[in-house]
Image (cartoon, rainbow, N blue to C red; front, side, top):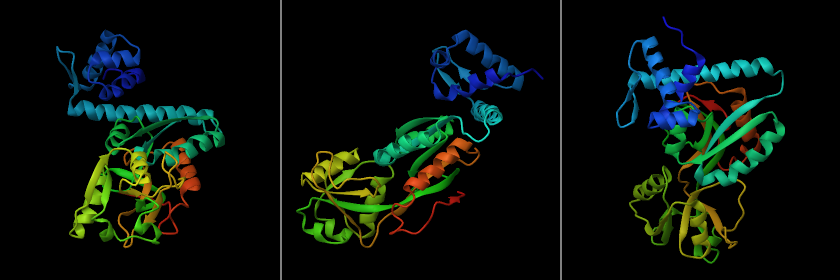
Amino acid sequence: MADVSLRQLELFAALPNFSTLSAAAAHLHISESALSHAVTSLEKAVGEQLCVRRKARGLTLTPAGQQFAKQARKIISDTQELVLGARQEEELRGPVKLGCYSSFATNVVPELLEGFPRRHPGVQMEIMVGTNEELLSALQAGNLDVALVYNVSLPLGYRRRKIYATQLEVHLHPSHPLASASAVNLRDLASEPYIQYEATPGTVNVTDAFTALGLEPRIKARVSQTNLVEALVGRGVGYGLLMSRPNRLPTSTEGRPVVRRPLDPPVTDSHVVGIWPEDMNLTPRAAALLNFAVEKLGGYGRERLSGGAEEVQV
């Protein structure tokens, strides 16, 4: 059997992130011919085709190649952990890559990015903010260690750890008749102008909640940013429905007051969770980061929802 080097595995593990061999070569700081030779050598070693390289310079991994890249990433990750583990005694050192769902990133990332490196100065944090689809893709590609997302409509194949409890709540202008209530029934909002936050899985959850009551919201505007929802609510354009979040001020980004009230009966009780592929082990740094997130954010929402920060299999 031909020898396979760690460098060859490293090169091939990066290929799923690129659509052409030339783009991969540029990112890896290697010539395209050298990268092509490394791939050919690997294919000879394993005895089958791992990717399709077309004349138009397109690059597609075969099913065998996709599996090979996945296993190569694991070998590289395990090797890095082996080296780091041999170097360190008690202090954590090395990189940790955290993904965060965009709608609540401004409410959780600052606390984590400020506090975690202060506690573990030997760890280098990298942050990716994105949609559910972007974060799941990055996890599968090995570009993230762990991602923080809502525990709603997640696919199989991920392990989860609860970070904090959350639920859908209504955002109202202070002059709205329902703003003085301690809680709001979703039925009382159906005829009101609604500022809809367009994102997966939030949009479907809200639509399903209205449909379950035989109602349909009167959508005034559809926007893709939670800050814009709150800005429009602060101007009295309509009401919003967003998941509750820690570290918030009772104002919009323009400094206008916004009233937030829970729904009664509740709709979409859930958690923000840390997730990672079930076939991958958390690095000590990623595990420590989740512990820190639970410590700093885990108390939020528990007065309304049950549940702790335990890990669960999915």
